[in-house]
Image (tube, rainbow, N blue to C red):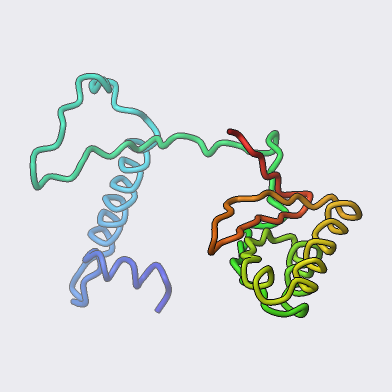
Length: 174
């Protein structure tokens, strides 16, 4: 059984009775081809009687009107796609207690390009030498790598700084 035979049988144009004449069979095929031609003609020709401003909105429970001529897909070859170097920045809030914590901050800023918020109050109270070393490392990052450091808040129990890489601009307005 061929593909066309399957289509004819599924549409009901081919009957299984052997008494059907060849003429009836050909007329059924002619009807099928005429129906297909009518469908394709209706899709290719827009309906001139309807005007887009005269279309009525669909009633509740009714499907909206279908536009057989969809808009063409826009071509984006003329535009340049911009992709960010980093899709997001992790801003780490850390309260360093040792020099290893300060080295971690340096790695985050220099190698990972992530800004870091530091609370240096613990180092200031517990170890003046480590506090001075942390200040020296921040100065070196600013001088060698263009990192930015900005004091956010200084109180009795907090000493907050933000240290960011050169690519992340931190601006003090006010």
